[in-house]
Image 1 (cartoon, rainbow, N blue to C red):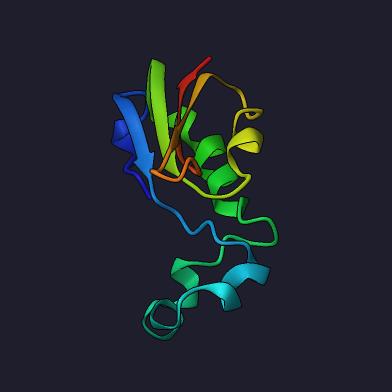
Image 2 (image 1 turned 90 degrees about the vertical axis):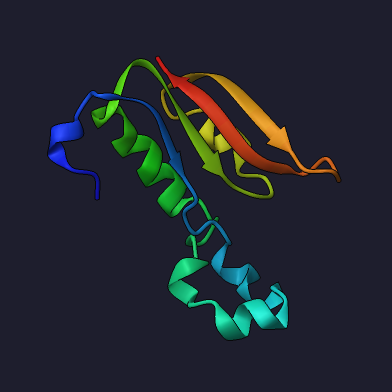
Length: 106
C-alpha cells in the first residue's frame, strides 16, 4: 500500500509484482520453486492479475503525465498497453524477450 498523502504526487510508479502464470509455476527452476514463496511468483491464470491491479491503482499516485514501470514476462506487454496509458515502451532482455514496460498516464 502507498500512503494516501502521496496521492497525485509522484512522477513514477515502479513495481515488480508476481507475474508468472499459475500453470507455469512447475516450469520454474527448482531453486526458485523451493525457496521462493508461491505468493511472490503466482500472477494468476495469465500472470497479469497483479500487473493489471498495479496499472489500475497507479493513477491515484501519479501526477499528470507520470509514468509506470513494470517488470513482466512472456506475452504480457501487449495487454498492459490496453489499460489507459500511452507511449508504451517495451524493454527486452538480451534474448529479445519482453521483460518490462514503461508507459505514461494519458
